[in-house]
Image (cartoon, each protein chain N blue to C red):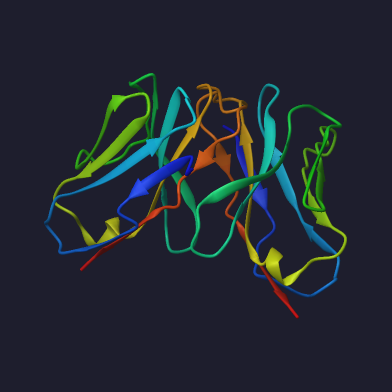
Length: 113
Length: 114
């Protein structure tokens, strides 16, 4: 079945540091890939998505590129802020199961001033 | 306007009680979901409904019963609450049933069973 493997946290960075959170997947078919973010005490919200190979999703300075050859969708940001502190989830949809979104385990990011 | 709303936000109750959580979306979406998030932040799909029809029932105990009175509402009733039911429950919705679509999440209901 479909699966998502995400870099284990927690990740602690200083403000303005470079961020990478690794995400790899296994799936059949042609899935869409997502990064969702959960700020403290809130629900998940979409950060960015990509629907086909070589697509790059971007939002709020975050980027991720859908790499079919390495089955990866790594999240990057050039300069993190304290307000980026949150849990980040990589997710896959429309793969082997068209009706179930498959989430990674989440990565807690803490950014210190 | 809140796109996906849930009530209550917090729920503290005793073991053995019955409780309900309500969810409403004003996005005009056809598909709604319930997820459970445990203390380690792991998310697990419980149910999904499309146009009031059950699509997914992900091996959830029978004590959990979803009800969708219309496309905009998906409620979750839990009978005989157990300690292990303590978690955050999220409602979500999407335009279509395929999970290639973005899902929109509510703020969560934090359930604590004592």
